[in-house]
Image (cartoon, rainbow, N blue to C red; front, side):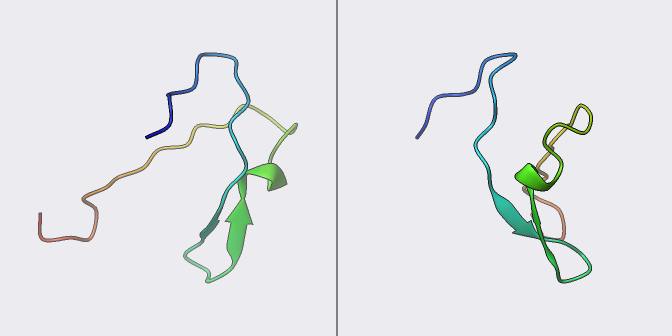
Length: 47
């Protein structure tokens, strides 16, 4: 497991599928504004 990022560190780039079936990358938004990334591990699951 990788170490957590510290405040102010640049997050590594990654891509995920959007609800529109497109791929969205973090780098698509870099430099525009502050970005908050949240992951909901239990969404749409019976857990």
